[in-house]
Length: 329
Image: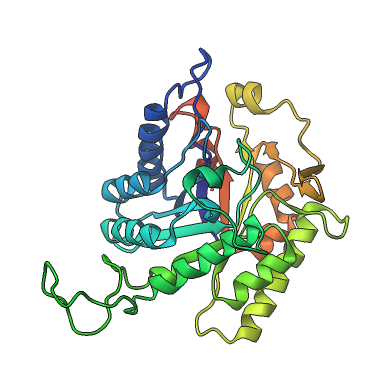
């Protein structure tokens, strides 16, 4: 049995054909979508994070609102670009959102991908240390974030504090116990998946990865998952890891679905570049009648390897259409 959730990029545009024309629309519809998904029996509500774009950006107000309006569904990100983050302030936001949600946060992080502006993280006040790349900086921010989530004291208390302190070094508050085990890493390569396993993060693998062998996308992704699990076992972690993959999957249920999604053209993997030096492979989309979909998905090796499947949703078509793929599952 797999966990099934949705992943929304939260696009919005003032175009006349869009049902999501403003940032307010994107945020409020995201909350309503999570509530509807929970009512349908879905297991997860996940949101993409992009800066300098007409998409969802700062995730924690949204995650806290979803947590307050739902009671069961997992709430997460896929992914937060750690190049832009103050890991200590982020730990406070994450702790608060997780407590509001009753311990349901599942945070996906990443070292980041090409963004809307050049070196956008510089505008947020961050820059790599000497000899460090921006990807290294993102991973460094992530390791600091993981360390403070453990809830261990590290800050020297003021001898004359404004409020009484507990004894010893102080930790960040609010602290949410167990959140450290619900942090995921969005890995674009086998090497970063292995790194995530070694430091005890769950694995998120999306619809693209580095084209490392030239094989079909789902085969390369399945190999990445197996390498991750082997590294996790070798590291000797006490708990079992979780692995998610995301897919564009649409069940064609009627003529309206066929008009929107039945045109074809995305039935094969695509090759492209996410940076000038890195060739990437982009996985195919699935759009078909339910019986055909089931047969197609059974042949996807990475879906079979993962324990969690995230369905990307076309959020600009409006709330009535977004949950339709979830109904298939």
